[in-house]
Length: 130
Image 1 (cartoon, one colour):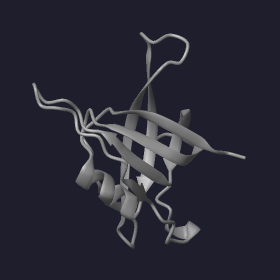
Image 2 (cartoon, helix red, strand yellow):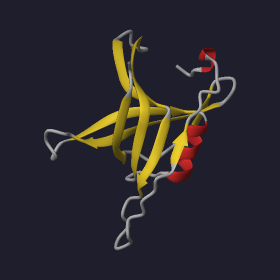
Image 3 (cartoon, one colour):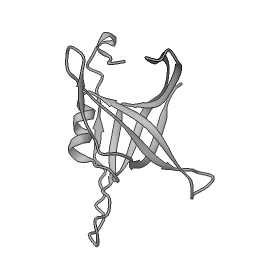
């Protein structure tokens, strides 16, 4: 079973791109996750959210906000780049996310949320942008 759950902070500004003939919304970003064995170390794990989930992430989260990626799949893609070099891309394909906590802005109190957002798979395999 390929199931991955991550809690961390959004590493970059959230940008939605619309790809393919059907203009599917896609967010590619990274989540900053503290290493379990060494609290001083942070791992930046790339993730992708598709469809409505991508648009929802843009609406509710920004760089620095804490989110939970739930029921994600770990994906590994092998490809050859334009320089004919073999490359590998490893990332989490997230199907659900929750906004855990907004980042602190000055002396403002941090806002917590339990709202869960779904990225329903309302598309065919041919619609996948990769």
